[in-house]
Image (cartoon, rainbow, N blue to C red; front, side, top):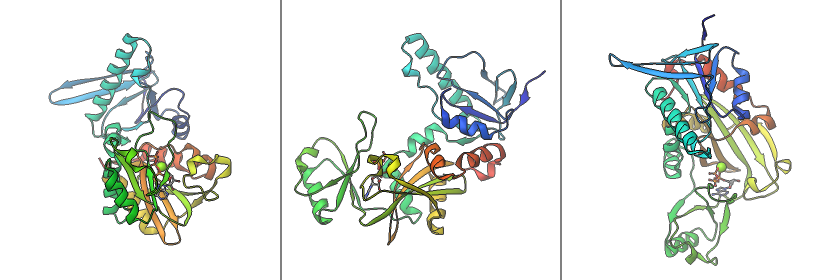
Length: 314
Ligand SMILES: Nc1ncnc2c1ncn2[C@@H]1O[C@H](COP(=O)(O)OP(=O)(O)OP(=O)(O)O)[C@@H](O)[C@H]1O
Ligand SMILES: [Mg+2]
């Protein structure tokens, strides 16, 4: 029997439970799943460039995708080629991943999300400026490695400032931390630090997950922690909530302007309103779906299977 034509490509590691969740919402024959970073010969992927166009197909024997405008790609976190201990395998995994990404990017598919757009959108300066353009309230923020500039900022904010890590790749979690003028600010010399005005009198944190033009929001409440990530999940209270309409609209526009279809935005909510903090372009959602029953995976699966190019950003 010839393979059935599918329109969704799921690119993820084999043990990716979140990809499993989305796949479980797709029809059995609606998608092909592969991990280009893990060498398997069960899926063939290739493209031919002739007469000015690419013809790209992916086939797992049972299903086949002829890549085109109706195709959607759910690109999560395939195995990183550099995790293979063997140099040959590293090289082959790198070739496979680079070839697949390049071929898919040569077509006008729907991406959730294009990993190159994710990389470009992860930077906080871009995110904060984009959020402000869409009317979201953004705290006064400073990047500096100059102790005097930091001291002036902390003093101007009457000692109500936090410092946050830009990357968490080379450490265990560095939580958001208060910074005061009496702290040893000389120690920042040589490393650019990310300082921000403290948002006071928090009612709760909010995680807003955007899927296309749909918004799924949850509150995360602790007993007064500055950073909820330092509190065991069992001691946080999670609930589905509805943000103000203008915040919802701004979140959708912000994600679209970044060139993304999916993202998870963080806010602090006070009696005074919602303050934007950051956008997690490849943020996980399985945990918040499990805690609140927000139907995020269903929305992702629906968009992957029912999209028309007109609803997408790229
Ligand atoms: N300016 C601020 N005022 C008050 N609380 C803040 C501020 N910035 C961050 N927080 C708190 O710190 C925690 C983490 O916030 P945020 O997501 O901005 O941190 P981050 O270090 O940028 O995160 P990530 O590691 O996901 O990039 C949240 O509980 C948030 O409310
Ligand atoms: Mg965050």
